[in-house]
Length: 183
Image 1: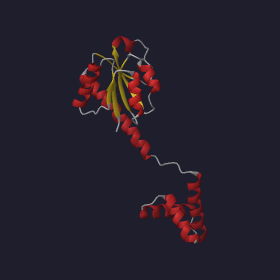
Image 2: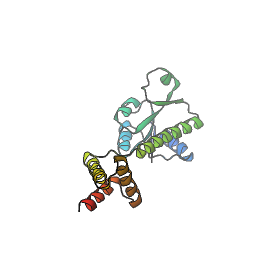
Image 3: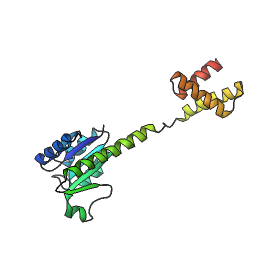
Image 4: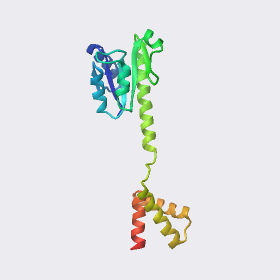
């Protein structure tokens, strides 16, 4: 699950933002008042959104951006003057104060949805096989091609189908084929 961290200089403001998000169905992983606390909290999460102010007691938002793990995005809450000044780093989502509740909740939700889409796409990508695993599949294909007079594609499809039918991955299936045909 994507974590939301609220970091603002005043604890009451952070609590209010947290309560606003929770009332609108967005879970908040934690609230804090310093950048160091936010970074420590982010280190314990896979990814998420850091909702923060421009300047905290110990650092600026840009220093948080540099120190948080790669799966995190920043939503900066700042005055219109700061946002419009051109001082904001790229890759930062911004909302000007005072906040419009609807815009704020929708922005956080949009950021979370984007992260979850990226996570699903990443999981859907097939894992890269190691050289040893690819070698086992190749060896099983060659054995099928030589013994059963299959083309390379037919041998690959055969391994793939056996893998699906038995509920094992292709490497395990290739190992079983090699064990049965060589043994």
